[in-house]
Length: 432
Ligand SMILES: NC(=O)c1ccc[n+]([C@@H]2O[C@H](COP(=O)([O-])OP(=O)(O)OC[C@H]3O[C@@H](n4cnc5c(N)ncnc54)[C@H](OP(=O)(O)O)[C@@H]3O)[C@@H](O)[C@H]2O)c1
Image (cartoon, rainbow, N blue to C red; front, side):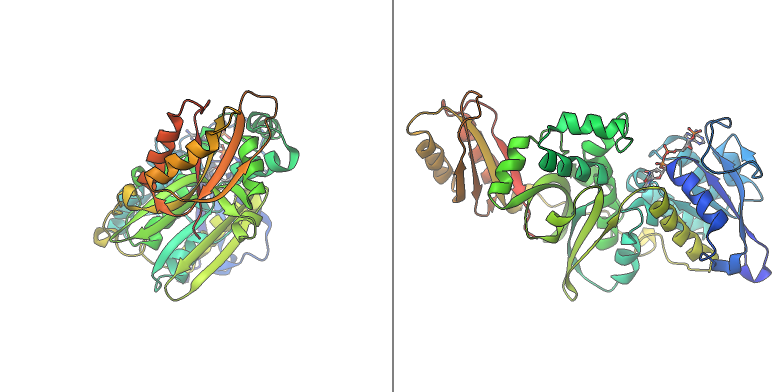
């Protein structure tokens, strides 16, 4: 619809959960939000249950049982998808809206990370925008910064804390001295973590977000299958304490690094130096560090989730649509974008933190050091703690940079020593 006609834009909102209800509240009552001269209204809503009580009044808004029907309704000028999930009703409704020639705004990172290329092709064929600011870092305009603000920049590294639930759990473990399972249980009771926390604690949510940022940063299409994902389920209090004694904090870091002709995208619990800005972002905060050829380094942080911040990001996309902003979905028309070129991880080098539980007997430390030296790994620092009642003594060390394959091989060799009592633990140390 041409805004010159001055007919109010009809906004169809599918999904009335945390974000959907937040958006209805925002659109209904924020006088500061005035794109298109305020000429818009919520023309229809859809959710799974019509009878479920909502924190906002939707009694005067037309109800649609089926989000596909809402997407296709003639009153819907812009379709907002806030259902979630990479497939199912969210994907069906977004496709229906695009096929009907309607602009789409979504907060759905799983959908964009897994199907972004095909949806962008459909949007470009139909010449309508497909926008997803709220999908990454909630209220922090990370997509706009990378997609638009840095379009002329060669980004080399983009790395951040992109999942507030994991950041909250790791922060609580450190400050309260409680285990992963205890803190997760509390977070679920308080509503900070989902009943099924796999998407968050397994690293998949952060993986979806870094997949989207990598596509924008490296001018390619998103490909979630190219991301290496590891979560925080295996992080023990002992590692958090040992890392701190060595001058680091453990964070779930999602990163995309340019390497040669390709890039590496991964999510892994990693050690961050205590004085690095990423180490200072505690609780449910999200944070992002970007390094490029011309800009050097910069850092942003803010609320990565929640009704208000996420609704504000959805509203920013709505404002772009209503005021006529038209850019391709990613950095260029999707037909001109290659898929992400994955580099062979064995070519990458890095520094590592290693923890071993060993028998408390003479010669063990020498055996560990010799095994590392034979593998070609040099030790940077070393720490031994008294046994805390458990069998064996924990020793931890950090290494200088070495090929990742060499580090993995060294750990395997040490695991085979008779004095080593448990599966060794290895975490990477960030290089940013
Ligand atoms: N929560 C956040 O802070 C946040 C931040 C950034 C991005 N996001 C993204 O925003 C999206 C929505 O998240 P959310 O937290 O608001 O989710 P949510 O609270 O679980 O809400 C999901 C909504 O979708 C509705 N729904 C489910 N199946 C449906 C179907 N078949 N047809 C129509 N509606 C259906 C649900 O209906 P009922 O209410 O009737 O069950 C509910 O209203 C997700 O993609 C999420 O990843 C969320």
